[in-house]
Image (cartoon, rainbow, N blue to C red; front, side, top):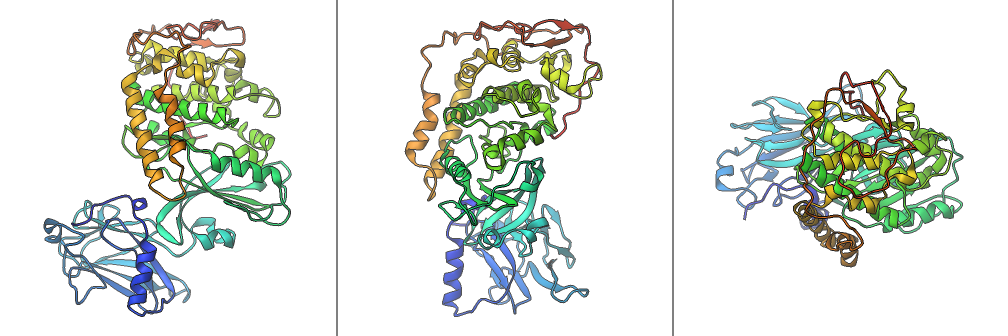
Length: 549
């Protein structure tokens, strides 16, 4: 059976296969100058090594170093693959004899593509890490190229990290660090996202790291507090939170090796679509609130929830949501992290801002952030912004002043969705819903949506259980128990309309869910004005821009 095009994390034991092949050939491995990760389940990983400086790929079994045959491709695919389709060679740099480029040359009749673009017959393309190579059409993917050179700042990474993981491209960066794509050196089919936190960017005193323990690498004197937090994070298992695979801790830098979500950040999805339709936003938000309820029950408060920290498992609209960056405050210092985050306060609760992150607060800060995220998903723009020039951003947040008055954005959104937002973005934390109360809101009493979410979570748990060192079946059962059970204490009617819309007048103005707001009936089916205090005559003139925090 010819191979399917699959995600590279679906393949196991590639390194073992390659090692066995080399042993059979009696070859001693030379110095590696390139890695090729298969994007077809029937192809093997290739390690390009000295003294060979050129490898040929195609159908010709006599001339090609990598032969494309019937075990990996259908007859229709083989019909468009040339006997000698492309070659990859090592090109030394004239300025530095120890440096080199890895170059692909297209020698086919029907074309070779790199990242979906044809190279051109007899033309060359200098490969970059994570370039995808396809034959004739982008649908016939064969390999992903991974450079042996360190990426970005990876050359300064500690050897214990780079000996175990091949560091590839930079995936993103934020206030708390950079995220790199990494591959496990022992098995290149396993890829992760590694978050690198520079402790010097935080103001708290850095405690010297400690000795090695299970899942965490540390140096010198043992710091039990950090070690305890790492062990707590590694034990957290829920389909809607990113799994912490491993932690390396040093005096100046922290490395967190994390499960990788292939669908990217929620922020990018919202920006691309200029907001999400209500059904999709509901599916995503339901999973978020399940994850946060789980974390809160484990006595973990996230503190930095924002669309950039909500990841999507796939590029499909119906996809699993995964929360990341939880527990970071315990590893770098809570007050230090909160002071850093106060520099970009768009998603922070008023009680954090009022004390510049130095005061006391509880898990309700996460609920505020979820309310802001829900607003953004439905509207495509933030509830609080510097673009509102009548009031400083910090004052908008302290007063919980926001508006549903942009008719283009909100006229099609249900009354219940806006009602839930109005019970989450409340300045008085005591009157803000908690995670369980939010799950019991009428807007989330959508059984069809819950079935989709349950199916996505169940598939994720089955995938984890089929891999070694992943979470157990009992953990999976715990994760879905919240979905399968009905809260008997809830008095919400499931017959409430879920798609009812309310027309907004152009004269609608900002509202304030201030500390004097009345929000006693947490489960009533109300409009967006139900949790309002006073309103101000300062209508929105234009939608503010959604920027990364």
